[in-house]
Every structure is written in C-alpha cells, then in structure tokens.
Image (cartoon, helix red, strand yellow):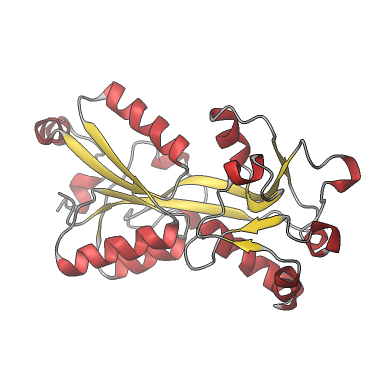
Length: 253
C-alpha cells in the first residue's frame, strides 16, 4: 500500500507505468450507469487502461466491498457510494489507502474530504422530485414533498429503499426530521412503490409511476438516454444535498 507521503504526490510516472502494465482497473460505483460509462470512456481515451464498471446502489456496493475484504477476494480498485458514513467506517476498518488527487485543492469544505486523504467527495447532488412532463402539467405538478401525500397522487409515486439507496436514505432522514415518521405512514397509504434504487427514469417515462423521489441529476440521465419526458422540481419545503465520496481500496488488485 502507498505511504501517505507518496500518496500526496498524486499520480507519479512510476504509478502510471505500473498501472499501464496491469492494464485494467475495477471501479465499483453507485453513480448512474450513464455517468459511470462516461467516466469510463474518458479514462480509457486518456490512458491505455481498461475500466471494469460495476454499478449498484450505495449500500449494495458497501456490503459487497466489506464482504470481499473479509473473505480476502478484493476484486475492486476504486469505490464510490453516495453515503459518507460508509467511508468513515471503511477507513476505521483499514479498508482504504490514502491518496490525494490533483483536484483535492478544489474541494473547499473540510467536511467533504478525510483530513488524512483516505477519501474525497467527487460529487454533490441535490434531491428532487422528478416527474413525467407528458402526464403532469400546471397545478398537477407537485411543489413540495408534503404534496405527495395528496390523494390525487395515490399510486403515482416511486421511491428507492433506504437500506440500499443513498439518495433515499438522505431524503428519508430529512423528511422524518421535518415531518416525523407519520410522513412515510401517509406515503404508504398513498400506495408508494418502493424499489431498490430511486433511479427509475424508464418507469416514470413509461407512465407506470409519474413521480420519483430521487435527485436532480435524473434530468440529465434522461436526456442522455434520449428520454425527453422527465422534468424535475426542487421542492419548496427542502432540497437536501448529498455528498458522494470515492476512495482507493487498501487491498486493490
């Protein structure tokens, strides 16, 4: 593993030469597959190194790297989720190695990186309500999270599961803080559909559900997939910011 002193130098010619000789890197991420594949393409265009992308929801990724660490299988090199506490836990368990990316000085808040550079936030997302713009117009478009409890949205809302989706966990934490657990009891009575991840662009585009409780980046995911019918609302009763860190695993291949 790299010493903190060497890690602080970023990518040295020696590290790059060793990486080229290995020829591939495995990247576990909770980022949308559209974004992850863009990063893969950009990296592969810059370096003659193949990127293997595994995209799953945050907690599924976290559980997987923990299991692999415990079993000694260690398949991944870099890991990214949407939950900062995952990285605090992984650092404490000695699962991460220190590394300071060249862009570290662009991260202004010390809350967004580890003081010893074991992890750094690589994305900031804003939570939002995304909706089908063909089916919902004008006053039918919800303006607040509280609006989703209106009977007119019965059977029309989809959310992720708090045990797997980092975005959903953040939304749930804040809504319970604001409105109490009664909010989710009421949402259940309104027949909310709960799936593993909150990223349900196709489901909403097909009209199977009309609103998803997720994040603003779904707008760009939809555009990248040539799906024009997805809109986004930044709720008036609260937009929550999610910081997604990334790190290099200590036992990376």
